[in-house]
Amino acid sequence: MIDRDTGMAAVSVSRRRFLVQAGVAGLSLSATPAWAQAVVRLPLASDPRDRPITSEFPQKRDLILQRTRPPLLETPLEVFDQGVFTPNDRFYVRWHWADIPNEIDVGTFRLKVHGHVNKILSLTLTEIIRDLPQVELNAVNQCSGNSRGLFQPRVAGAQWANGAMGNAKWTGVGLKDVLDLAGVKAGAVQVRFNGLDEPVVPDAPDFMKSLDIDLARNGEVMIAYTMNGEQLPLLNGFPLRLIVPGWYSTYWVKMLNDIEVLDRPDDNYWMTTAYTIPDTPYANIKPGQTGVKMVPISRMVPRSFITNMADGASFPAGAKTLVRGIAVGGDTGVAKVDFSADGGKSWQATKLGMDYGKYSFRQWETDFILPERGVHSLMVRCTNSENVAQPSVPNWNGSGFMRNVIETTSVTAT
Image (cartoon, rainbow, N blue to C red; front, side, top):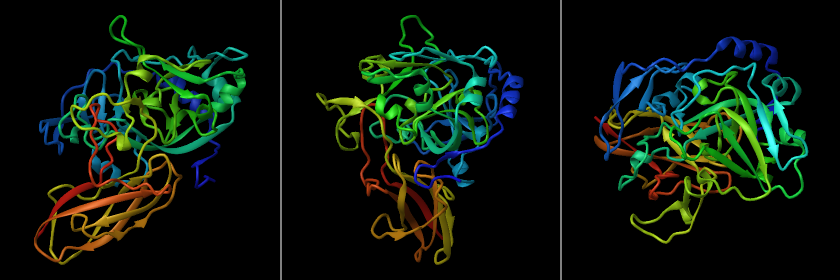
């Protein structure tokens, strides 16, 4: 049984079966992708190039290729119309450094826990799965720069459309249980996480992220070893991945192998320089604006999308038409989703689908009629359980982070 508020519960996935599958898998990333079966043109005014659709990465199929090294693979928007949970083989991929292990030996793999603790741990995958309580959490993983390609003026970085996100059932162990096993000392301030990926040039900063000690021990943050009932794909963090529900995926460290409890704030590059946002409403500033206080990015904000029709779709005027999509409340649940068929002049409530927990996607649908022929703007707006709604005006910042404006889909009634 899943708690409707947190989405977390004890589960009984076969641990023996997981270990056998993991040991056999080998998980190679040695194949060189061949481009490409098809192409797609994303709705990016500032970058209208065609992108290849590829299935050449291991354990992946039919994803939009944004970059090969490090691999950046985007989920096509129509995938989100197929259900609340995003299939593993179509789940987006984002890495910072290209030096990613080609395979993982689960027999020799260790998760180290050290720093400001009473007992240094070196845990095998067997010990983690067998000896610690198992939990499950439904949660959206979303890149901080999802939809960056829609920013105007254009900003540097991966030109994602809206597919740098996905929702999964994560199974693993609670981070709090791991930290309690090591014994956190008084005076602990933050917990830092590191993975097996490494910088490609000397002196480049190793990718590490930190959470405040209270967040790390809140009982929701977890270490996952399965995703949608199967072992994690290599490109999504096999064998272990940190899950920080309601927070952007920069904190969801992949191939997690090192946890360090700190007695001071973490001052590494990825916390103090990269992934920082203006300390303003909606992380919004004017292009060229300087002298703005910057803070680390953290919690997600509400978003919603139409998934069963794309820009340029057409249907008969006067006909009743079904529109549906997905919404996420950000760092809390979805309270309501409203739909407009007239560019935001009027709004109607939609019917919400099953609630899989406050951090999960939630489906919505409604019927509408366009009485007149011509082009019409369809809009969808999510309001979360904290009464925070999507804004009508897009934000802007130099990193292209945290876009959550009400999205518009242009359709034609014939």
